[in-house]
Image 1 (cartoon, rainbow over the protein chains, first blue to last red):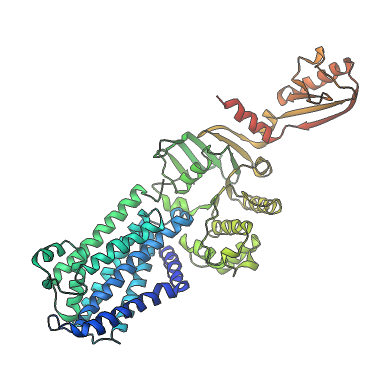
Image 2 (image 1 turned 180 degrees about the vertical axis):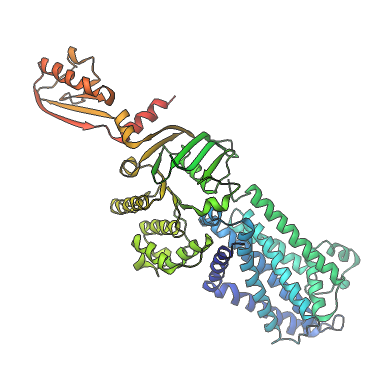
Length: 253
Length: 309
């Protein structure tokens, strides 16, 4: 394993975060705080508890997921798209590093950023509502797995995207709607039966459900199903990335 | 001869059907500067891109110091430094960080002394803290060279190293490139500037329409394909070539005030004397005679012209 190469990519990507601290960290914290103010305090106080959990507390895992999924995807996508856009991609492609090491560098940095933001939001949410974590190890594991799998997904998006518009379209037209429809702000048992069945096709539903279970021991599906879902999504993304590098899709001509 | 780069039967056809390389074979000797000359779209950059791992070949093989660039890519790439044609840099980084990044990318531990030495070599040390966006085009190109050198490659590919660089800086770069060769590095450069190839190259490879037309030692090439131009200024205009000079490669200039005789190297020894004898026998009044060797550019143009359909 070429640790110096991985370290170089990782430090380079992390330093971009520190250069753009306002956009990378402060902005998601502010927008999530606004969700707590509106849904948690203003509207949430008028909504009855779900599975004996106050509505304000109930939405914490979903809000963390919303931010983490968007951040993982967009950070990793931007991380690989930008070198393609400005031409500096020639450096990792001509360096003596394997594709796997390149992915560890980029995805590792995107995972670190989104994982950190997820933890910051968890701490911030404590300022607005009572948050209890029934299974902290599972909570960390779910958060980490989600960050990794969606950073891998973001890497694929970054390779695929032809322009900045396509880059942002995936998060705004795909990730955000799926998170909203994946039970972030409600339990799917509150939906009509047909929509409950449709929700089962939304992969993000499993992540939110499992993550919420680690907090409140309440879930829409069994926790092992959620864990298998996130694991399968990671493996699918890894396989696609392997294929991208093998064929040189949109990276090599 | 020790071949540090060996290219065998390389073909490249892009997805749009353009055949960029056609059965290219080329050996580069250790410690030499090889200039790849060719018009735009000839395949120079494609050839370098394949050797460096940026582009896949459709068929054929490339060996770097005996390592197959596909099978032993790590060992091969460790030896290679690439200076790309386009200036591709992260605008918001500073010089020092970007050079350290390049060294790290090659799997090497940080080496502040070497980074300093490299930046000093390229007159960039004073700019080490400068943001890359604040640098001039010439300085950015030097940063690209520093990034390519900081892992101490023994083979350096320079793709149009002096494109868009002013004359003074170009000469500085030439000194750097010669210095690399003197230290034992092998340099492959593509260039549009024939003057650059003439100044730097030990050998010249001419590539046109994806095929290598010619590979030759520069001096040998000039000797074989060069020649001498004898420019005869006349006191009286001359409308046609005198009969006894018509057997030579001669023409009258447009203003009819001069006669130009072009003598190929291979005929030079016997022909110049005969020509001067015959010239003496004409009734032309000569004001002055000047001579000039054919330049590499003229040789290059004549090769490209010969191959036009």
